[in-house]
Length: 597
Image (cartoon, rainbow, N blue to C red):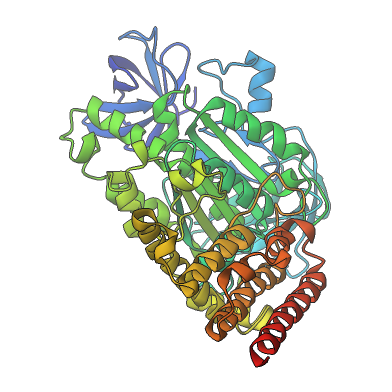
């Protein structure tokens, strides 16, 4: 027992809430509860009495059992070895847990997140010399964590002063000393390949920066219609069975981020098992290596203690900020924030706090905002830029978007991908509703699209959304009085909207060709469908009947182009577009000839 570890006793147990008597305990301190050492965190204090929320089941724990303060807040270990890892909600590696307790996580396990025995090839920063002044976030050296991620060993926040020495190149474990720094008070700090950081405290940075480039996910309805910037805040709300998990997995697999962190927060076990089994087998489309070489997973299922859900998102965010500080663009996917909010409601109820909307605590909105606020693009202390893009799934009961978690989230985020049960029932995936979804990043994303892809992107996107809006109005008329009440021009608008829906918006995650769509292919498909609509409308204005246009074989092929041509075959799509143009010109000439006679 060290001076840092103090012992007390358990006084009261109320589910995951435990009251302890522990002298010198501090708010937020991590503690161990009972004979088996359950992981817990102090959430309130009254003298030497502390209220602890435990992240493991308290069954069998009795008053009078010991409680031990660890002397530090709930923290994570940050260093080489995170990438490719699969952790539980308090950053214990599941692979090591399985060796100790089998398929089920035993309570009270104390397993370090990072491997103490593994040796890492450390290469010191050639720009550093003894006697130099260094500060937080500066790069001490690099470690090849995986083939695609170069791990930058950073000076921890709070450490600054004169560099006394830095270790030469060689193999070191994470606890080996790689540098000594003497601060202004003359205290020497020993730095290793890893450090700890409290999960509830955002990591410092120089300044917040504006997002400049979109996160390319390969999903047309997202990239083309409702883009998300790197460093942005997004949400995917939808009822059960609408496809939230598939949308998030597609983003994790195909986004052009440097690092992907997937946090399963209270989701069903079978969904997380699918993630854990499928991700290690996937190939990264950008490097050709295994996807897990730039991915780490935090797995917290619905049958695990409910309070652990609350910690899992903070654990994922802290690791995301750590890689952001290295200058990487990180995407963190939280599935789902509704389950996280249920943990808040559980703790609030156990503490006897006054509930507000649907039993949630009054601080739900502020806690949500604090989480999403940790996303963003920043200038780091290492004189570079990095970003954390946070995308949270929301599971409103019955698909009711007016419930508290969804409504508060909508007020906070910048991109809202609303999933529709009607679209999912119609087998239209991704079932993102183009009527209720929105993005606040369109104008910034347009600058990138205009420079990299085509200057007509914003115009074409606006035209497509206007066509879809007219389709929604006309569909209501058809439902009331039937299609015979529509003019030929209105019926062609319905045909054009259907072409955009099937040829652009609909995208199968199971189609080997269409699961990912490059920006160039996305715009080519959108421009093809809108060109068909524009040329058809011009012919209808001349008097060509809509029935003749609707029977054109080119329309059926236009719907299939997304699966016929991959992202490297954009020129073939352009060639087909020219063939379609010739077909329309042929109809125009034939119609003009008939009427001239």
